[in-house]
Length: 323
Length: 142
Figure (tube, each protein chain N blue to C red):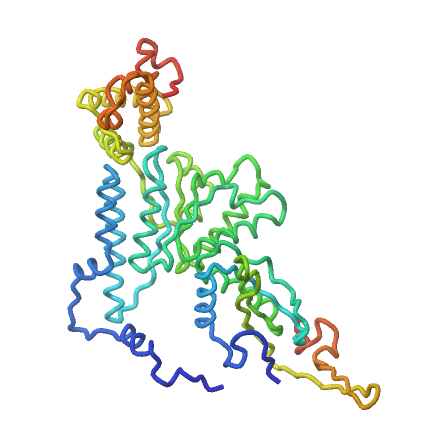
């Protein structure tokens, strides 16, 4: 049947033709201009400003961005480029910023034009694995469909596979995931995250998964200085500030807390600041005089010294800390 | 005879690219999509069979199109349509519904006239396809 509007020059017809036109072989493309046009510098700047440390992670992200940018330029010359494998695995201790980076990654890939929507769908074992026979496949496919055009972020992915139970439905989920990662590469980017050692044993028992992931990125633990910077950023974001003495106390707190068990990097810092705010508030409530704006926004050493980390100075390693 | 029901039915069949754009339009409006199929395309047959459940919380058309293709694979000689449901208060109805696949051969309908009281006539549309039982209509493809 004749298709009206196809042959006639419609409103969008010239635009489409423009895009598909390949450049002559002697043309030049200004990569810096390309960069500026799609605004990935904004993402990088935000990455640098908001995320302290994580040098290897940022390097890898820059490398990926460069590759995608060059691929775009190649495509404009009509050079064929296969779509790069963008599935990733983030490993690292708790609180090292895996989820945050995954969110940034979705935005970055969207700006580079490798994702159509740029949203992030977070899933854990509960969202993917079913309760009875025949429940798993629709559940997993449902999550995959929701994530299409964006990033599927699977936190603590090693829970998908249970070694001790052969009939666990997690295996089915892994198979469906593998299939989607292979066949729907242009629709979906899968990012797995988890602790390093458990992820490694997960990949040992699922070699197919490991080989389909191109980017294994390890998130290093933060140094003391980085943790301090993170704390400052968090305090600032909440509209508070440390006095110089409190700054020193905070550093001491971090030193002590870092040596203790179950230290969760940036997450522990956040919790410490939350509790300092609580103590700050109750301290202000106990004063009978009216308070100034300064007092409302300033954290002093005693807000931090109330922590249990300072309380059991003698036997600090023997007890499980709560702060 | 070409069946015309739903949106776009007087246009040539939409290509996958065009279907994707329509799905994306529906999703951008917040209308969940669902896929239905039938081998009895009588205009009064509103209740087609559901291909899976309606798909909620999607943001990209690729997921819906994948379901359409699954359905096409399983029912190559059926009518398949795509519905987009507008759940907003005051609407709560199908906002967009169009055919995304039709059988290779559409035998069409016979018009039956029944003499009634006085000289009035009752009309019935009779699909030739339904002369055969389920599963044998349209080239015997299930």
